Image 1 (tube, rainbow, N blue to C red):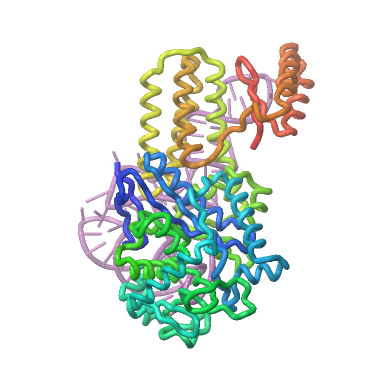
Image 2: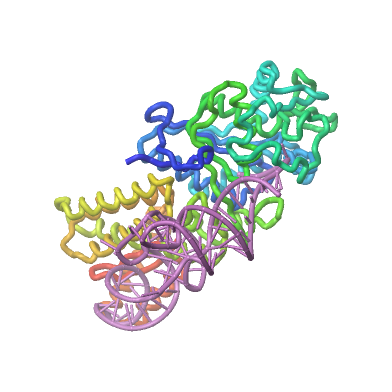
Length: 477
RNA sequence: GGCGGCGUAGCCAAGAGGUUAAGGCGGAGGUCUGCAAAACCUCUAUUCAUCGGUUCGACUCCGAUCGCCGCCUCCA
């Protein structure tokens, strides 16, 4: 069964074939670290996390690079985001970078995202970027103007192939005033001259300055993954100009295709409009995690497709949380039975069930990482498992086999942790003791006291379920 | 002005030229249960923004209209 990926470059789903068999090189545009990460980052990076996880599930050796932008990313006003932020917070630019880089990783860890294999910083790759620009000048794709270097878009006829735009159709200066020193409004900065008061500046052959924003991705992608990579991911809003410029400068330099599969994920909306830093309508991940669990947020995000926008609304997130509880219940009950039942033969009906749903899950994931459908099949699977749980004659090994397959899909591929380990709960022995007492009371039909214990325990986040033989307990997430 | 996307039940959300339009939440009823909880069963869109067209057949393709959204050198 082939893996199909929607390639933004061709606007078609294509069969995925990496350059080197069994290996995947993947680059994803990372954050500009000048503020706390928000739920837009969450959706974006969860989407790519799933892609990495699924590729690894399929057996590919993936090298996953995601940059940290800490220089050169400018605001409309022409100010560097990092410098502006540092000014605002009265800290050194690199102090700001450190603070928000940590915040970013902490948030990503909290959401159970796999760390990239390499997280290169733009400011740590200035020599490589300078070298990149020098080569472009050498090859006449770039020109120097007043201490800055610009890419000459007219030399690269393919400019616009990713976003489907023609240079002449654009309303130059629609949003930002056109710099007069550029030969053409579409030309973009590779290197910018720094005014003396601009703190972040480096010596270059063209005087003191700093790199243009687009440059870092091309440079670092090539450095760590090679001239042509398999997958480049990013947010849709970066398709133009950012990725278009990356393609232009990279392909101008090497004469080879820069990226084979471009993957763009859609945006997070709030009340139907884009959530963004500039609109100020964003929720930080920390704040979201105060209201919802990490698993719930992941599940909510994955219940819509990565190429669809998702509206971050309370009702929908809570509904997702309820749904997730059902999957949790299934695994919980499976594990209770694994604990309880005796060893035995793996029966073929169980083997077939596991196989059937593994195939369904893979079929959906193979169709451009269709997580909503994959989750749909998990709910069907869950229902089948629940029916199996009704059968008293099934042995431990069967339940173990099913539990393992269920975890593989939900926890390993979707990255959603389903259970809290009982060993991790320090109150564990006391809970056991209370349950013992409560069951004594139940035996004596002292329902009032027994119910009181249950209510009080539940108030402390422990859920009780009275089974036929014993009472099971779990910690609420 | 240019480029692109979306409009599917009370809510979220897949799908796709042709057997019953996934799945989740919510709701209704039932089974089980000391009561709970969980689970299971049944029901909950004759219809896919609107209007035309193509077709033996369209929610799916084409055109128009209405509404919403993104990008056009700031954003994941």
